[in-house]
Every structure is written in C-alpha cells, then in structure tokens.
Amino acid sequence: MLVLPKGLRHIPGHLDRAGQEQLVNEIRTVVGQAPLYRPEMPRTGKPLSVRMTNCGDLGWVADKAGYRYQDRHPVTGAPWPPIPDMLLQLWRELSGDSRPPQACLVNFYDDKARMGLHQDRDEQDFSAPVLSVSLGDACLFRVGGTERSQPTRSFRLESGDVVVLGGESRLVFHGVDRIYPTTSTLLRDGGRINLTLRRVSG
Ligand code: MD3
Ligand code: FE
Image 1 (cartoon, rainbow, N blue to C red):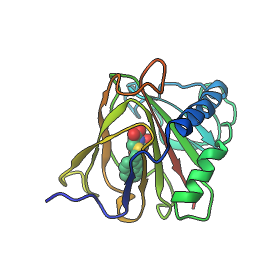
Image 2 (spheres, protein in one colour):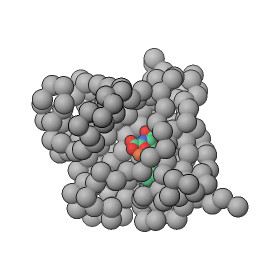
Image 3 (cartoon, rainbow, N blue to C red):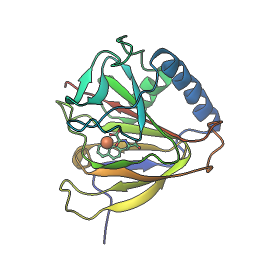
C-alpha cells in the first residue's frame, strides 16, 4: 500500500472562490512589478517549460550557473516585490512556524508545461515547511519518498487547494506530470499558478 509521506497535509478547497480571486489580483500586481520569465537548466541552458517570478526578500532562480536564491530579479535587476499580506496570513495560519516566509516562488504553467520529479534542497534550513497554493487549472501532481527510486503516488491538485510539506515530507521527491486544460474559470486565459512559500536561511 502506498501512503502519503508523513507531514504532508493536503487541504482541498482551503481558499474559496472569492479568496482565490483576491489572491490572483495580488499576484497580478506582483507580476506587474516582477515579470514572469523562463528560467534555464543549469549547465545545458535548456529553458524550463514553467515560467517563474518571485516575491519576498529572496527569490529562487535557475540559470546556466545553477540553482540559487537571490534578492533581485534576474532580468530587471530590481528587488522582488513584497509577499502579499494574504499569503503571510495563510503562512501564520498553516505553517506552524513563528518566523515569516522569506521567499514566495510564483510558477506559471501553460497547457504544455510540467515539472520533473525533484527535491527542494536549495534552502539552508529544512526545519520550516514548504506551503503551496494552487490557482487555476487542475494538475496531476506526484509525490514519492526521499530517494528517487522509491514508489510514487499521484493525485490531483485543484484551484484553491493548499499543501503543507513539513517534517518527513519536506525532502520527498515531487513533480507536476500534467496540467488539465479548461478545468477552471479562475484565470481568463487558462493555465495554472502555483505559489510556494519558504524559509530559506534558517
Ligand atoms: C516541497 N512546485 O516550485 S508545489 C517547486 O506545483 C515545486 O508548482 C510544484 O515543486 C508546483 O519546487 C509543487 C507543492 C509541493 C509538493 C511537494 C513537496 C512542494 C514540495 C515536497 C517537498 C517539498
Ligand atoms: Fe519542488
């Protein structure tokens, strides 16, 4: 039997439609100040299919030099805009950590975008959970164990769902296998937004 890793908490429909709409508006403001761009794979420079930006003190970036957190947008050179209050509140409510998040990665998936199985280990501190919010079209999400060879289990993430990855689940392999186009009316032009809130430096 495959069970979800300990410490993984999936909260379907945590945000109602009004909350989702409010959050999309906040993210539109963020993207207006820090445009989505397409990161590149380390070494090869191959573009990722997911477009990204960040808000918060630190943002996750990827380019030919590697993966890292930095305090400025790699294209505009500007500091990242602040994390919207609504997300800070969500973190206080659900993270179980008294410290505020330092980074909020904004991932945008069009119909064809996906994210291969990976671990999140570019942070210095794994004691805080990662908190994820899904908006727009649904996706097929996959989680495994802390070793790539371990079995995985897939489930669907819908608009308004929140996932908290703490404890033993913090370092599990995970990825997004596919987007289900036209499954949500939240984003006028379709697609999926995922927001991940993190502590980076401890
Ligand atoms: C963290 N994003 O940006 S978030 C990523 O839907 C990323 O855009 C996915 O993976 C997305 O790094 C998934 C939810 C998630 C799920 C499992 C995790 C984050 C996780 C397990 C460990 C750490
Ligand atoms: Fe990840």
